[in-house]
Image: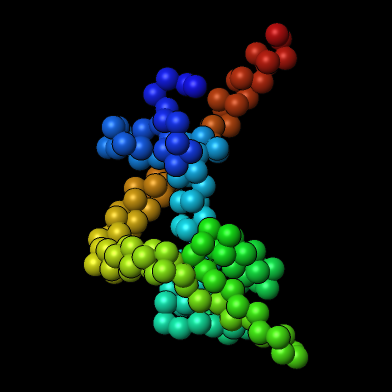
Length: 163
């Protein structure tokens, strides 16, 4: 075992002692990173937010989430179900009816997402100002360099030919 790692698969290097330095491991096999990748993507956040209110059918979720494809929503729901955040109920009717709802674990995550959204709402004006300042600094405001004078270009041409 690599020095500085833990035996439990839920711990990755740097997640406890060096929390301020490295909050999660950047290796692909780190479970913390994998979970963060899953729950922090835009479709998962939207699904979790919508399911907090009540259980929804697939078609209701798709209608509520602007821009999500059927395939992407299917993949997202399967991943959230696999992670224990969403429960899927198939009703034996024709046409088939499938409902999705948050599990108790998923509800705890929703509370964390609400905190993140609240932070974003409180700081959105500051972030907008920072973006505008950055964009102003990053945008070149100087005129392009002038083309060489015709006399200078003519003087360089014989030198190039002579070489």
